[in-house]
Image (tube, rainbow, N blue to C red; front, top):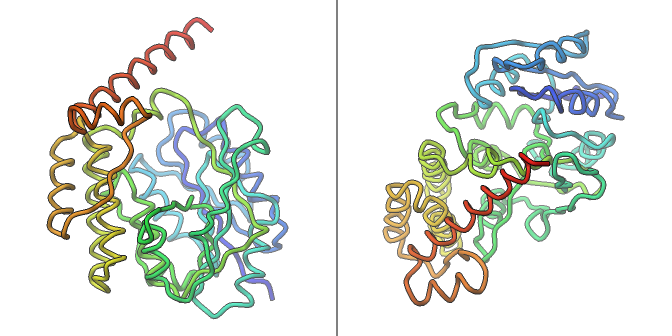
Length: 335
């Protein structure tokens, strides 16, 4: 008997891409799939598009705008599946993604997660010509979820990331991990999947499964993560991830991974939210310091950093980036 897979699609003002996401879920070669779409107060035609697919297999729910994490929690409450597949409304799945991961999990112990590679592409471009991220060396099979998470976060010197749709998760693990944290605006997926990983019995990589991750060159997308609210959320999320790990181990690898991420956040937050920068640097010192410093830019910026310090060099790097964005805005306006 085929287990049911629930594909959960949170949606907010995604009329341009929603049909592609839904079709990719409906087109799965796995025979038992339900799709739950939660429209999070869209002001465009997203809800109408979603409702045009409504049937026994596709459940459409509308709610007031409360954010993506709330929409995912709403979808999760409605889900009946034995496995959960998250899918953002602007991304999509390869036709055999779910089937290939189920086949891997069939040969694995209970409570094991499946993961796969992701094709990154820019909106408006051919997805098949994007950049494939297979996740290696971070996506190794493992029966030690804590060690796997530490490796992903940079415990061995480099870190990686996992696009949420790359996972296929047994419902029993989802229930043990708990709901999405609706207080987080940035890195809510990193915090959530840290709990999911730690609630699991291990991770298995499916080399043939594939998901597609859409990226954007818009000014709003390029600058949206740099608001004080988002940066404070990033700090809150990282504090939680650090707590989950340090409550289980205080190994050198764990501390190296955590301080690495605090250093990345400290630099990313400056000069947009100096309070987050200082809080992140304080945490690094509390944990014994770090020998890692994120690159600020190209060779010229690196040389400037040696002369005037990282904060002034970072300010110049940000100013040059903002100048580039203004030029992009002008070119788009005249195109």
